[in-house]
Image (cartoon, rainbow, N blue to C red; front, side, top):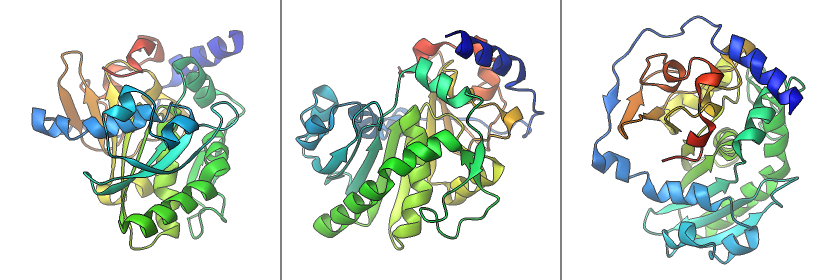
Length: 287
């Protein structure tokens, strides 16, 4: 705990030491109909916290009951050494779903700010052809690598079984970081398949080159809740950047679409939480 406090203190001083990357841009408010589109994916991200035996049977309480008819293909992880994950098919959405488990706020804050983790290049076997300029948080990369082959095999099975070429990747917290890495990894091995990612409380995962690559095609949406501090780490002063696609939920309950990367308007997470101690970890779980 003392180590975490020291790391967070340093982050608090430096998290926004980098100059503003973007001028203020037009912020748009989502309609009720636009917000409702995210509801099934929110439940899918929450279901990733369930034991794999329960997700395999799709019997993990309200988070599964909300998306009845979902057919699980595979699941795994142990929730400690390896985060839970699952893959399956939603006939209503006509999409294969890939989900990764998150973690509690204190753990993700420690993970994302631990000085032992650095920006590092991606594994060339898992990410063939990726530019060496693209670097990511080594801890997130190591965790994603544990399940990469199994997740890819499960997605291939789902494509064959259900005849779908649509894949939606979801996750919350650390699960969002792993899912963002999957959003780069899976397309490299599955040409001709359409991907999108809907992520919640996403910490920064990689450098500017990674953020630019992940932003290609605008297929990533990452939703931040009020003053959650997790999306503000690791700090930009360390070379980390978010991709485009931010939606920020205001204290009023309004959902604002924030254009660009790390938009510093005070209606977006960087402007709303300029210092990590201005954040509120109770907002991490969502509204």
